[in-house]
Image (cartoon, rainbow, N blue to C red; front, side, top):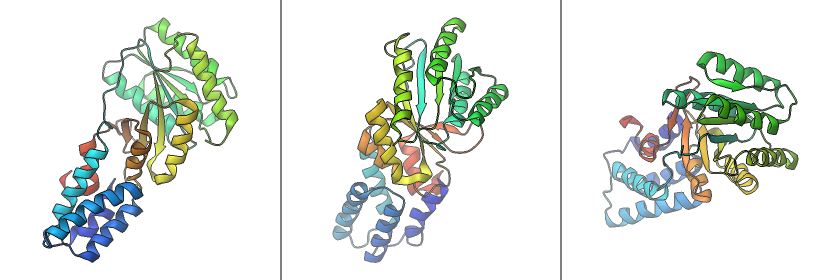
Length: 294
């Protein structure tokens, strides 16, 4: 998240140990809006900083960041939570718009969960793009996780059903379903996601146990539109934010959490298999406001 951090931090970098003034406060406000924190969060943070400035005209830049950090921590309470793997198998369905990074995320999660001791199997339910099948197959060969593949144009719900049955037969405890990129305004594609849920329900009424929306951080606050639509149509249980390294729109994470109240389970910070991390409120805030502490 270097770009976001540097943009915010550059506003006060020159006066980090010096006193703020009206111009720098306004510059900080503009930087927060440009980072897509949203109106409510930006106003809340700036109100606290302005209150402190009225009391102390010698308020330092570092103190302003500490205030911003404190406000964000309160807003993001509950955003980083543990994953419930109590169901056996636990089914994780990844959904999202085209290009958000679902297939790569599915592979990264399979790799991470496997290293943590889980038996993982992935279902290649993206049957619209032939390239998606090839991509997940290559990841499977490279990282060594089990995969239930499909033919181009196959019924995605059938693939999900077959993956669940394979998990039961092979003793796998985590199922990851990589679905096709869904355009949030396409009712027919949303209907296919609902069909996956119905078909899985025939094997386990609680499946999928997790429905995670994969969000491209570079889309900024625009990602909130699709997040709300997916939540309405499919019933999301969490968020994964990809491409968080270098994006200028990382503040949108706050807006999505504030609007939907869904936990943020993981962030993608690079292209390598290991470049997926559990979301941490403290690490996120430090990367925004105190990048030199990382």
